[in-house]
Length: 238
Ligand code: SF4
Image 1 (tube, rainbow, N blue to C red):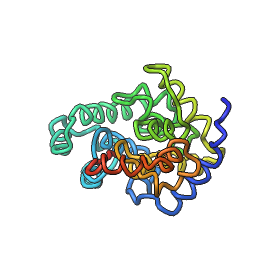
Image 2 (image 1 turned 60 degrees about the vertical axis):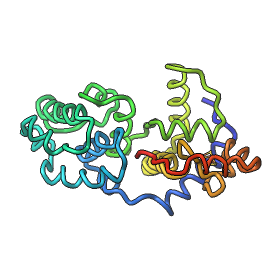
Image 3 (image 1 turned 180 degrees about the horizontal axis):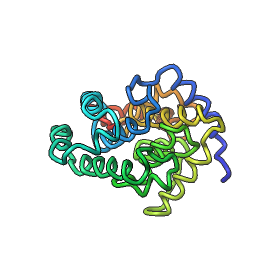
Image 4 (image 1 turned 180 degrees about the vertical axis):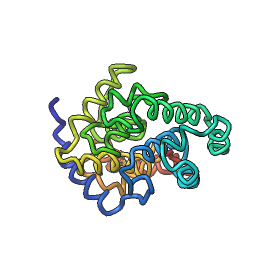
């Protein structure tokens, strides 16, 4: 895929910002695939601040995939109480049992094999492969999709073709080195969650503004200030 002309400068600015400003999150200080799976399940549809409460508690109670696989459905549900979307807890429990039964307790590093597990879609498979195993794969969630759409001024079709183009672009943007891939994926998520928010993007102080097609347009027209006012009080996930 041919990269947009602002791709290189965007990547450089994004990584530079991330290395200075990365959020300190406990699932970023580990490469334990099980812990990363737990964090990814919890982060679906849930604020980071809530997950920060539940994540260490859950891991204290179920420190390994074996511990979780031996729990009863009722115990797992109790541990999830308050996080909501209990379907995630059920899927996580089923995943743990499948890993122990069919994968000798080892979570696969291949996104295709990860996608065969209960509750694991394309995004979660990419995130686990990238964050636990530093595999060179993209992970496109709504935050990342929004950042890419704005930075590259994309006009996308709807449905599957939209997904296809976003994933293709995210994959083509990945750095070559594994460690840089890990950082790049994390950085995209941080930018989408804290700066390039769904409502009220902070374009005037955005670290990638000079490489962003939307940001340049908004800041020159004063649109960012309007967007900020509109977005007051919004609470980005992840
Ligand atoms: S300049 Fe604005 S639109 Fe572009 S990435 Fe930053 S916050 Fe998002």
